[in-house]
Length: 374
Image 1: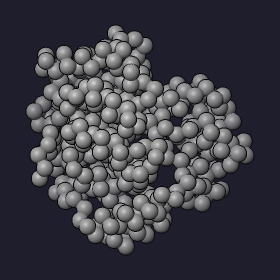
Image 2: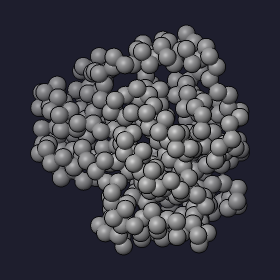
Image 3: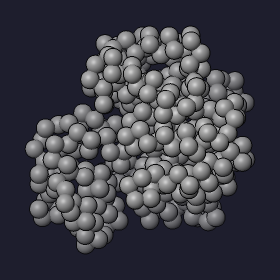
Image 4: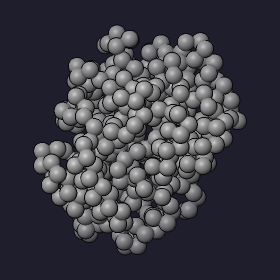
C-alpha cells in the first residue's frame, strides 16, 4: 500500500450535511443510531461545517457523537467559510470558536477552509485565514488542516504552490464527473497528487444522483454485479483511487448507512472487471444532458427571489434524464409552491457565484422556464 498521510484512515467518512430530518429539524435519535452503526463498524471520520444546516449539523455532531463517545475514539472535521455568513475578517475567524462551542469537541482533528472557488479563494488571503488556522494548530486546537475546493486545476495549482504546508485537499471526485469539463475532477486530482497532497473525497455519489442513475447505467452495473447497490459502485470507485484519506458519504437514513457499511466495513478496491464496467458507464454518461446539480443549496441562501433552484433542476432532470415529462412538470409545480419560480429570476448572478459545480444557473433557469411553460 502506498504510504501517504491518512493512508490508514478507514475509507468511509460520515458526511453530516444531509442528516435525517424530522420536520425541519435534524432527527437526533436516528442520527445517534447511524453514528452507533458507523462506530461499531470501525469507521471513525466525521465531517461537518459551520454553515451546514445553519449550525445544526455541528450541534448534531455534539449530541450524537461528541457527548456519547470518548474523544480519542473518532476524528472530527469542520470548516470555516469566509464567503458565506461572514462579512469581515473578525466574523470569519469567529466561526472557528463558534464551531468549537457548538461541537464541544475541544479540538478538531481536521479543519478546512471551506469551498474555495474562483470568486472567493482570495478572501482567505485577505482575511489572513491561512495564518489563523496555523496559529490554532500551534495551540493544539487543530491537528491537521487543509481546504475543500471547487474550481479549476490552474487555481488549485496556484493555491498549493502558495500554501505548500496544507496537509490535505478535499475534492469532488466521482466517476460521472471524472472528465466533466465543468468540474475537472481528474485534472484536480492529478494536481493535488502532483503536489503530494492526500485527498478527502466529497460528492462521490454526486448529491445522491449516482444512487439512482439513468436506466442505461443501471443496466451496465447490474450486468456486472446484480447484487451491488448503485451507490456502492460510486463510493468504491472513489475509494479505489491512490492517495485517498477517506470518502465522505452524506447519509440521510439508517438504510443508507447499512448499505454503505455492507461493502465499506471491509473495503476492497474495484478489480479490473469492475473498472471496465465503470468505463462503460462513463462512456454512456458522457452523452447525458442532465443539469449537474448536487443540491448543496449554496445557491438558495442568498437568492433575493427565494427560488428553489436545486428542486427546479431536479424536476427538469426528470425530463432530461428519465424522459418523464409530466412527472417533471408536477415536481416543478410542487417545488415552487409558495416560493419563487423559474420565471422570477432577475439574473443577479448570486447563484452562479456560489455554485460549486459552475452551473450556468441563469441560463438553465431560462431553459426550465421554457420547458415548464411558465
